[in-house]
Image 1 (cartoon, chains in turn orange, purple):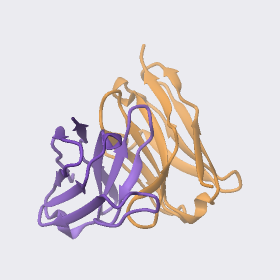
Image 2 (cartoon, one colour):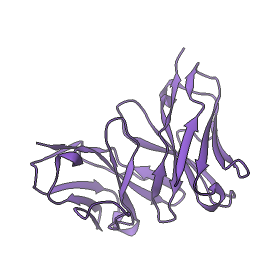
Image 3 (tube, one colour):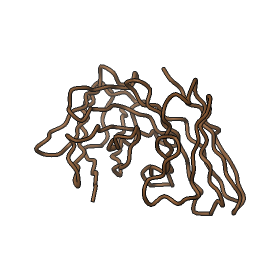
Length: 118
Length: 106
């Protein structure tokens, strides 16, 4: 069955970098668009980035554009989010989510927590 | 950037019908999805493409989208339906979520 397992979260100082990973199983990441979505403590969902099924298109929320980079490793069937110049407002639970092909996200991981604090 | 607006909270009595709205400019021209999220859990897709239910989602969940408003309707609401519900829309090259609505069943 489909499973998404995020890792790489932790406590980091403002201005530093962090890389999140999302290991997928039960499907191949090069067959679907893949997303990162975050949720600040006590807040709603915020879309962060998407990579198209063929890897040719990458789009970002304005709040992270120029600081975050989405990528994937097809042989490892893993999605990544490279985060740089982190800010306190980037503190959130980061989910990876599989695109369904029907303008929705049909599977979500359990999330990995990123805390940006000095 | 595109924005989706939801009421912060909705209350419903058990067995009654709950309606949660999601508003956006000309929303009917794009597909809307709905997610249920219970405390400590990841979001669960309950409605996609305005009114379609994924496998395993009870029939009491339905959706509609007309004009500037999409609506998630839960018929015969059960205590287990108490959760946060978020709408989602895909606008050009980005994805937008509503702020979420806390559904209380009391």
